[in-house]
Length: 202
Image: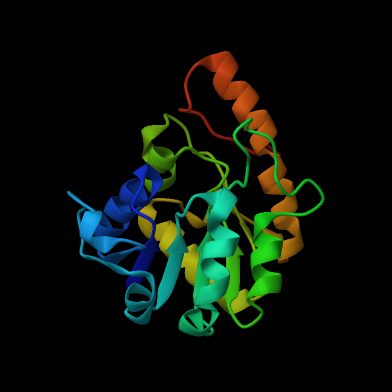
């Protein structure tokens, strides 16, 4: 599958490398592709990179991704947009306290099929869940069932078995997983390590 990763930071690089290992064709999208260096796949401008994609993964700085993605509405068309962001400010506090980035993106881009996932895990674990000694869980939120099925397949390619994936429902449930960031940040401070994840035991 042709997947465009928007962003060139650490999360973008880790997930892009994981997608390449899984056999996908990857390009990166950047506001300034000429300045991007040492990436494992070609770097293009945002609109040009999106045009090459079946699926777009936003690894942009979450605090600014809404303002970056909204002008790209026409370029995105009806593509699946994977949103992995937790929109927090410089104090690590939630920006959308009564909503979520996922919901805001879906409202701003009504034709785009937004799927929220991978925002509850550190980047390396998201790209390779086998880094943890036991199986853990990943979540999906989105209004379009076919889009979630596509993203579920991509997650499986990264190593997230079907039984590890939990479909929470519509994009409104993105609020729940984004607000989990507050506990994630507290745990990371207490454990002094982001190398952990949720495991739902029933």
